[in-house]
Length: 125
Image (cartoon, rainbow, N blue to C red):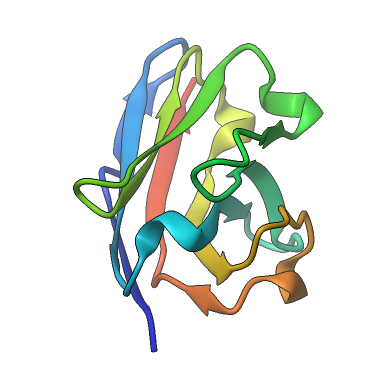
């Protein structure tokens, strides 16, 4: 059973930056695909970015964050991070970390087996 804990959310002005971190309590973290999703009020949860298991060297970004957000992983610390730059009010949402022990990289909510509790990101105009 994996446990994921997000941190790093908060309030930032438009144009600013935030860095989110996801700490994973799992065995062999390097075997896990990791992803960040977000859910705004009244909207469905959507993928923001994903990164494959170590060795796959594959990343995925939703079109709306390309060039602004960067996903990374640190297998030595069992963490995944999301660096968010040039934030806009449309990025306001609860951001969730997700994981699945798999050599693929899914883009759908139901592909991921484990979820964190979420961290709020609010961008003011």
